[in-house]
Structures are given as C-alpha cells and as structure tokens.
Amino acid sequence: QSVLTQPPSASGTPGQRVTISCSGSSSNIGSFPVNWYRQLPGMAPKLLIYRNNQRPSGVPARFSGSKSGTSASLAISGLQSEDEADYYCAAWDDSLNGFCVFGGGTKLTVL
Amino acid sequence: EVQLVQSGAEVKKPGESLKISCKGSGYSFVSYWIGWVRQMPGKGLEWMAIIYPGDSDTRYSPSFQGQVTISVDKFINTAHLQWSSLKASDTAMYYCVRVGIIPADGVYDYWGQGTLVTVSS
Image 1: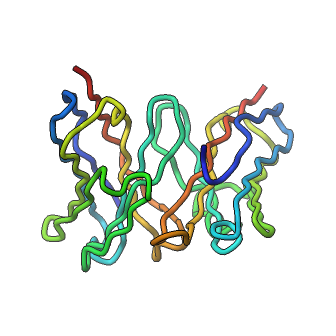
Image 2: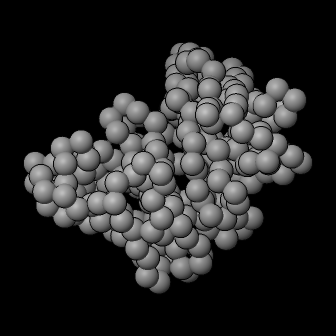
C-alpha cells in the first residue's frame, strides 16, 4: 500500500487529453511539492514534472502538472503512442525523520 | 554531462552480503544528495535512502531503516548500498538517483541505469 494513491491504470486514444491523479495527506502533498516520473518499458524512470508544474528541459508542453491541497494531477494532452508508460508521483513526507514517498504508479495505455 | 553509472547485475544466495555502487560524474559530487530507489519485479518505485556526500548525512525510509546501509566515498565520487544478509525478497532492480538541490523537493533529476539483484538459493 503506497502512501500516495494513484489509479493503477488509465487509457486514451491518440490526440486525447488524459489526467492521472495522485492523492496524499497533509504530511506530504499538503506540505511539499509534487514531482512526476515517467518510466518507459524496460527503462529507468525519468523526471517529467517537478515542483508541481515545472517541466525539465526537453519535456514537451503537452505535459502539465497541478496541485491543490493534498492532491495533484498530471495532464497529458495530444496523447501519442509513445506516451504509453508507467507514471509515478512523488513527494517528500515529514513524518518521522523525513523521507520521500512514491505513488503506486499508473500504467497509461494508448488505445 | 551528468552521469550515474551503476555496478553490474548480481546473483546471490540468501544470507550472503552485497554492496552495489553508483559512480557520479559530470557534476560536483559532494554538492548533491544521492540515493537509491527499489523496484521489485512488476511493481512500483520505492524510495530507500539518500546521503549527502559532503558530510555523510543520511535519511532512510522507515521501510528500509535497519535493512540496508547507504554510504559514500566522496574521493572516488561513488555511493554504495549494502546488505549484510540478503533475503529472497531483496530481489529487485535498484536505481541510483541524484537529488536536485534539497531533499524536501523530492526531485530526482538524474537516474542510473539500474542494478538487478537476484537472490535465490
């Protein structure tokens, strides 16, 4: 059971807009920025969105992030077949001595 | 170019010890926290621990505290993850990550290629 809750799966057709949610609590998302990671099949994860809504260099503008209270969302517009991957949210948690928590991951399928 | 290069795959028996490594290059190694993330077969990402090479300050996930040891040799720009007695449940891919700026941002801006650890009798 992950500390951050994501839907296990999501899907869309090419060109569509899809969103993936990430729910946490006051000790993590409610207090710290949310980051999103994408893991293509057989590859190491990569940073996709950082500090709630910032895109690293090279990430297309069709990827966007938002946060409200103890929840966050990743939106992908203009869905492409190469977007089929696993997506993870993550945030710091100030319980105990402080540590990072990941969501369980969402497998995105492009139909 | 920032790179994190991890040591190769390992096959071990239960009860054996193991130390895997991650060598950073292309940046000031002592200035960034570095850590480890586990991914069990077919499962999601699990944050394990991070260490600051400048002073060896560490943070562990409660799930991994006491189960593994993170360390660093700043003179050879290398971080390590160590087990004293492996279990079959330690079978996983282990990724090395560089922490961007501060731990509380939770930004892992560079990832190693992964080290596959297989524990089987």
